[in-house]
Length: 184
Image (cartoon, rainbow, N blue to C red; front, side, top):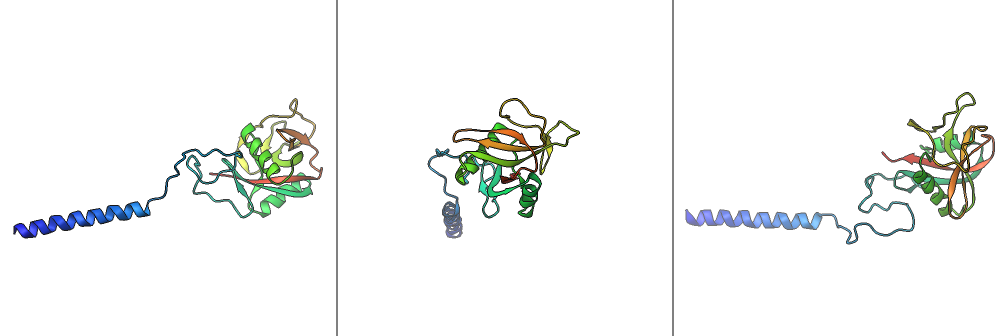
């Protein structure tokens, strides 16, 4: 009887140790540096990335709040919107300064260091409130270049080497664009 109990205890210990070592082998590796320094806001799936399981469509770059794709072809705002929709996205959101900086970074990454690109902000001539293509839960905009404009109905980002800001432009103007998908 004593031999049976000893044998059972030994088997339980051996199985437990084997299971523990298998869990360790299958455990994900943890980076030694919790918040690696980066020179760009693009996300790489490291700790602190709340959307680590989210993957962007082919060609899009993952940032902290959205996946972005620079489109160099000059189009009107409506043509750019339809082009983004054909790829399953919308024109990029830039309703905060942080999102505008992500769009600016995507422009620079694509080689457009100073220029204008369409983003998703728009309004109708009858309504002075801005809304965003593909975003139904937020009305408002980030930082304008100078005072908030009112004469045009489509938003673009004007960028130079170091910064970017929003401006309104005639919707028929032909500009490159940035498509985006909000991470949720």
